[in-house]
Image (cartoon, rainbow, N blue to C red; front, side, top):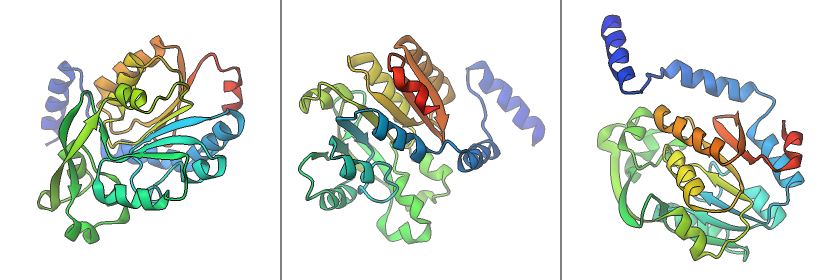
Length: 252
């Protein structure tokens, strides 16, 4: 078995891929839990010391569960677009923000083009078989759920309408985006790359990188470099800041 793994690792290495063990992922998560630079610390700094007038959150879920921005949006009354493609979560999202007129909701997914696409979720009658985290791992990639321990027979696909990040911004007439926050269970890199490629705005960008293919992740990093962004890792997220921000040094 060990010999087979070595041979397999060598073969996929020829194509630019690399095997990542479960231990590596667990170690990253352990380090994230212990680090003094937690994502909350970074968000506190961003909202306290940068003037965030507008934001987009992609993968908003229900606006409460696993939500990274709910308290900041309500406290600072930030004009925002919250994007969630799955109807049952979108309805909860609508309810949770029903009294906040500065919040706009989009029942869409972000993709490379305008299209209808399949997204994979756990069937309602099997959700109780797993921990609460299972509500937050919906993905365009079926294998993403399987890697999280979901039985293949417990998975179903839903068709969702998609829009590009460029068209989302144009549709909502956003001209001075302050923060782009992404958590899409593996598709984050595509959205960041397309944003940098097609949108002429320079917000702070935060996205979960741990589920992105290593070859494509390098492509995203190169694009961030070419667009003059600084970046650092905090709790499985990459914090990306325009280098022209003089107050960047206060974050680290």
